Picture 1 (cartoon, rainbow, N blue to C red):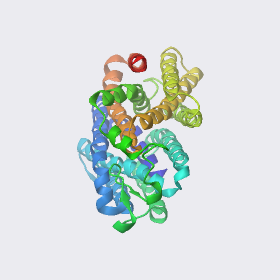
Picture 2 (picture 1 turned 180 degrees about the horizontal axis):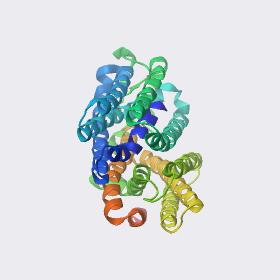
Picture 3 (picture 1 turned 60 degrees about the horizontal axis):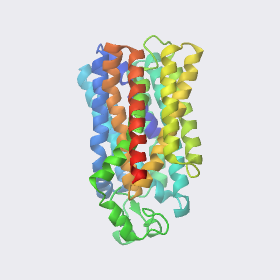
Length: 388
């Protein structure tokens, strides 16, 4: 909760802190993208860090990097250099943290409750984003930047007791198995979680060597989720509009609605087609974006809530789709998290350029058009696949 909140404190305020330091919106958006590049680049190395340091040590290392980023933001005198170093350290730390924390979930519960635990994990991380983003945006406008960074540091330190008490460190090799994908330690009772019940091991091995066509299929099917995360990042990083007062309140409404959408879609995903839920989330997000362009005041709250509900539904549905198309939970988690983080990275550039040169309304309409395009592509591809 606190490790994720600290990241979204920083993510939502990167552009605002750049403005306080006299930098342009485009520069702030570019630094935001640099931060997300750090997140994405670190994720493939998380399994190695987990094996080398043990889960507990690796999580301490990830939290420490995020903490170092805040300290550099406080102490480096050149505004742009300080912002870039803070973003890179925080991004690399969070990239390691998100993979390691996700990989730790199965070891905290019994095999029959792993799905429920992952769902709870997703809800908690969504709630952390829902609290961290708007609260950070409000704080950076209410207190000096150095005070804000101290608050983020305290949030990171609050994550430490959980790591100490509940998560394992190094374990004897004879007592563990490595799943080869997440770098997490998995005990014998969870070694078969990468296969659905009744599926023989050889099928898992066959699926692991999927063709380029199958990979492209997964990329296209997750593309609406990718664009959804761009929308998510644009609104968090740049607000619901250039002239909207109290942006944090609108962002908070969207975030809380996204949490509701994620829980609700996750609860019914076992009984309904995740693809249909994905399209439903996409439609809600498009409607919300269009409404955002044409309304103001109280109706803008409604528009933000519709967008949040759609994005939350997209998150849950796309995660289920990833698990159904990838051979192991670890690989599915990586595919889903990479789309999430790449979307946030693109949002920094798209938001900076869009808000500067097109304006907020045109930027939101471009996002709606991209959502519609990816939805149509995924619908066509699924129809072709089913007809075969």
